Each structure stands twice: as structure tokens, then as C-alpha cells.
Length: 492
Ligand code: BG6
Image 1: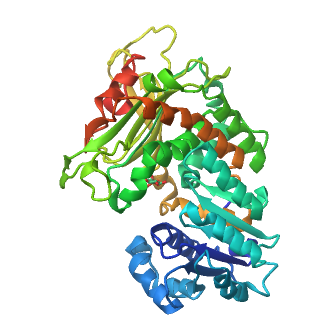
Image 2: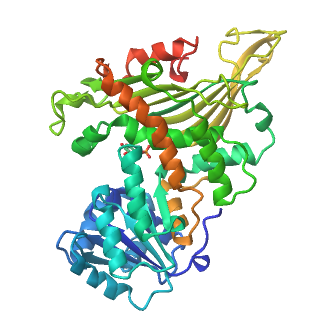
Image 3: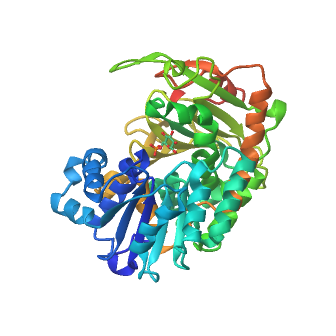
């Protein structure tokens, strides 16, 4: 699974729908630029920016200067590489619903049928069908074509199935790449390495040794300019159905027989199917939803969610979710998995905490009474690190043990720039490796688990619990975990 050199990648045509949009400018185009700088895009790789705006290529490139370039750290920016990268790009105006508009694209792609062809739909799902039909009717889908779509795929199981059916009308399942950018994060892949490239953890990775697992994706930002989208989406759909469940699944899956994409994905889906359903009362008792109120950060006051101009005054959309989940399997029976995510929390932190059980019989005292036994903390953000908390005897002291950390900061080890998750995924897309993309059955299984939670919330008279911006979420989230006599890692 190396990031390959340009020679190993075939020449490609990368068609980016929604090229003027936020995701394209903030992440996708900078990610391609970085791969270009690393010499990983073959010389003849072409990029077509496609969108409705009536622009010429020159104007589009100017936009990129203003909107994409600021997302490339000054230290990593190289003017000559940037110029070369821009020379790969052609902009085409295209209204996805107008069949005639595909002609210009067809003319550009004509004569290059044997190349890898990527259609990246960085657009609202509402126009996926139109794009797929337009591509199909214009004869642009070759055997070497693939299509990439972003999460959240649908609003629930039913709408996700509809989108998947529409994609399947134009593309084979093996050509469809469903993106969850969390899978492109280096530390998520390192989780696979940690578990399946070492013998150390596997014997401990089970209910007999693990007391609980906590996965937190906290963000300090609010919904920024995305109020309209977010209000119709909420944290459950935006973060839990995809990013949080993907982290949980990678953490909990059985060892696959090989690194073959389907061998890995076959194991992932078993975990999703083994998640105990949270329906009706169970859903209400094992989840907390919250909505942020105004609060203060060190750099000033921020308004509450309802003060956002794109959000209705009576919105019940959740900006925070905490869930106590369980996996029904021999390995995990009875181990609570706590999932938590929210906007406007204390800080931007993504971490996985695995709390191990106490020693069965203690012959030593400890300074903290073994309040937190061994703990493995895997951080994805802000820094990428793995820390293992163990007890040691302090020098010169009695056998009164102290907790210390074995610390691995990937930045110190590899001394490299932290990659944008999309860099990995876009390269995998071009070379046709679907391991880090979601299969149709995975998306469906995730929605099947999520939908009853949403339904229970809708039927409940309880609104989301308020929490102050800059906090760790509603107090009910602490109450949820303290029922098991546990606490969130940040409260330790
Ligand atoms: C996106 C969500 O998928 O992930 C956003 O739509 C969220 O709401 C973002 O802010 C978080 O991604 P990251 O990589 O910054 O943790």
C-alpha cells in the first residue's frame, strides 16, 4: 500500500465536478498539488475542473490562486511546481442537467479512451443522477473509468440506496469509490498496522483485557458558512454514520486474511452488522444529543448555533452526539464503545482511547490507586501519535508505582509534513485500489444502525441538550458514561 512513484501510475484524466466548490478548493486541488510536488503524478496526468460557473481556464486558475493556494502552507509552496501543476488543468463550464454541455468534455477526453478516467463528484448528491446519465449518454464511461462520491451518501438507508442505484445504472460496483476522508488519515491506516503488523496487541484486543473504548472527534469550529447544509444534516449524519463508525469498525474488526480490498471490507462489515441495534427507548437511554449555545474561547466570544443566520430559530438539529454502543460478538460482548463528536467543543481533537482492565491481583501500591490502568491513546489530531500508559517504579522510590507514557509522535519519527487525508485517497482512486473506500453494503449497514436512533429522537419530546461553546458538550454526556462508573478520557 505504498504511495507510488509517477512511473507506477498510469496516465490519467481526472474530471473534477464541483471544481469551484469549497471542498475542491480547500482539499482536493491542494492534495493533487502535493502529490504533483512529490513526483507522484505522471507527466501526462490531466485535470479537468468542471462546474456551472461561466469561466475560462485562466479565470479558474486565478480563482485557484485565491481560494486553493491559501490552503497550501507557505513553507511547502514552490512556485515552479505550482506553475507546472496549473498547466495540467483545463476548466470546462458544464451544467450537469444539460446534455449538450457534455460535448466539450467529450471532445477533450476523446482519443484518450485507454487512460484511467476518474470522475470525482464533489457536488450536491441531488445532481449525481444527472451527472451519471450525462456521462453515460455521452459515451464517456470507459472500462478504465471510476467515479468518486463524498459522504454523507443519502440522508438515511432508503435515500442512500436510491443514490447507490443511480450510480449502479452507470457504473459497476467495482468502479464506484465512496469516500470517507477519515480512512485517508495516516493514523487510521496506522491503526491497521498496529493491530495486524505486530503480535503485541492482538492477544489483549478483547473483552477479557479491555474495559472500554472511547472515540472522540471534537471540533472547536462551528458550522461556519455551512449553516444551511448542516441544519438539514446534523452531527449524527455528518460525523457518526461515517467517520466515527469507520474508526470503530477498524478498531473492532477481526484480522483479515490478507490486505486485499474485499478481505478487509468483508471484516469491516461484520462489525457493522454486529452492532447492537439502538431502537426506541434503548436509543434514548444510550445516546445524548446536544446543541451549542454562545460561549467564550481564549480569542473571544462566539455566538450560539441558533444565532447562525442560515439556521431557523427553532432548529432542533444536533451539533453534538454521544453514544454508548455495544458489539455483539465473542470478542467484544459487554465492552462499551463510547462515541462522541461535536462542533464548538473545547478544542480540535480526534482520539481513540482504549482502557485496559486492572491487573487481576495487585501486589503493589500505586500513586493513583490504579484509577486509570493501562491505556492506549491513539491521536489523529491535532498531532498524530500513539501513547501507551504503563505503571513503573520511580527511581529512588518505594514500590509505589507511578503511571508514565511510552510516547510515539509520528512527526518526530518521520519528520515529514502531515499529509492531507485526500492525498492518499486520490492516489488510490487513480491507481484503482478501493481498500480505503466504502463498499455499498457498508454504507447501507451503517445507515441501518443509525436510522432508528434518529427516529427515536424525532419521536421524543426532549429537545437536544444545550452546551456552552468551548466545553466538552452537555453534562448529560458525562452522565451517560458515568453510569458504567467510567469517565471520558479528558476528565481523568
Ligand atoms: C466532514 C464534515 O466530513 O468532516 C465536517 O462534514 C467536519 O462537518 C469535517 O468539520 C472534519 O474533518 P477533519 O478531517 O477536519 O477532522
